[in-house]
Image 1 (tube, one colour):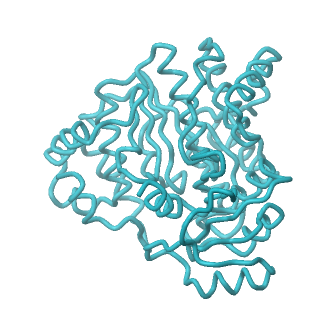
Image 2 (image 1 turned 120 degrees about the vertical axis):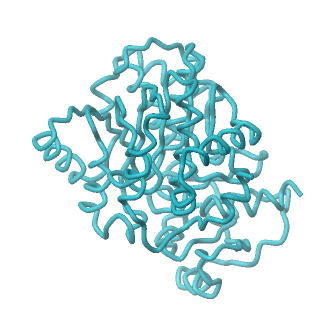
Image 3 (image 1 turned 120 degrees about the horizontal axis):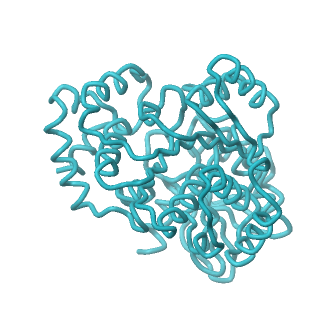
Length: 382
């Protein structure tokens, strides 16, 4: 069974064998008939950018797959095809096919993400015109980088997963941007070094790159404004939408505003109720985007954090919109000890307590990672 097979694999690794995925894929690539692949790299915004683009392509008549990660509640949230999450029954059948292609040693050695990437792409390769393929935490050495693509979309690059990607923005940008094969379109970047690194890559590899503004015309900006108003998009989601539309312009595919309606990926400043917002962001850039979107309002922040996140800085950024923090229990080996979170909250002068139940008279922002949103939804949905 697929779920049992995946449950036996750890979700996180202290060390990764970067040669394993290319080696395995090269051996089995004859089983993959690749469609047109658009690769998504960056720090924040990959999921919503990908879902905007995938939904638009599907509604414009193309068979389209979208591979994203991680999931919130169910594994099949990662594998979307033609408007729906692929059923576990179909994924199970694809799993049975894949394990006959791999050797037992390969199937066992592949990481959780490596295996699920091969699984999704085996499914998509049989029926897709386009696949929107979202990188995990890296770029150059990411499992998704083994598949030849026609275009790379680069969302904002910032500090995150430093243990794997490097301590500096220079290192992180280089690692991510090295995944570009032919052509890239960039979202607005806050660090000049991202553009400098791209200039170096243009000289070394002959790649072509555009800023998203170079591909958009006045009519596109009018369309973006209409979609943003209709969908009540936060500013950072408007940026993601703009990058998706720039990709359609590059592909010379005409579109209408309607193909982007109801195309948002759940968990990105999503409204569960009139008084509850949830967001799976878990880094400084995500916190800054949320502050910009919600400034002038106050929320009870339902929160927890992984050990490797700069949670004190994140809480400091969100402080202007926080009335108090309620810490939710998350059962995950990566989660920080409660005493350290409490110490950070006390040093910032933020009132806090343990999350126990919802008060319908209060407004809540659930933020801190996929695991935090998952823990909250289990309480909220009973």
